[in-house]
Length: 186
Image 1: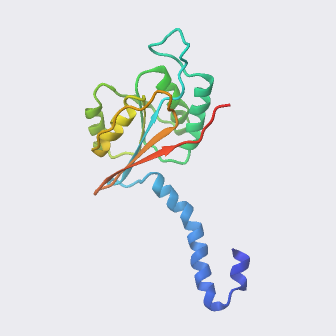
Image 2 (image 1 turned 120 degrees about the vertical axis):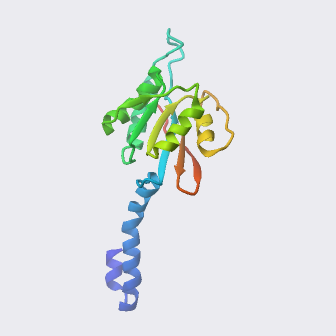
Image 3 (image 1 turned 90 degrees about the vertical axis):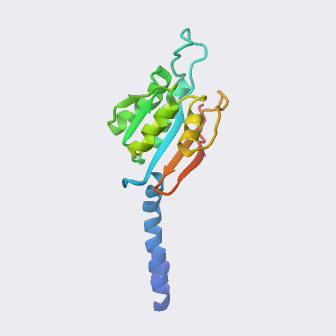
């Protein structure tokens, strides 16, 4: 780009300068899309816990599998550049261990929420107006996304671990983006 800029006629140099400026600003603009930072605009991310050990003796509170531990590290890397001010998790080992690497990297305390009262929790999230990450379950994460965006959404299949619900809330609207990650555990 720089080399082309030097070869352009003087009339075209202005256009090239604008393109160079846009090339530099687009990555910065992407960070704005990741999470807004003013008091009126904020983003809430919802993820399901990573893979749980279905063969565990403790079926009510199973740990993560080796693949689940790798996915939690993947989430840490994925959210590394994202501004997160609060982290919430249900009080299960699989959800806590999924979000722990992110909490440690961002030096944030994990707050616990009651997944049986998602309506009140959704109101707390909206009223806090903070960039937030919430870890839940296949039967709570989409329901919470629906409550936050005033839509009716139901649980998804327990075999799905690759979804991120991104809810961007501005003064005028609530937008839901469904992101499917490409993480594969090998």
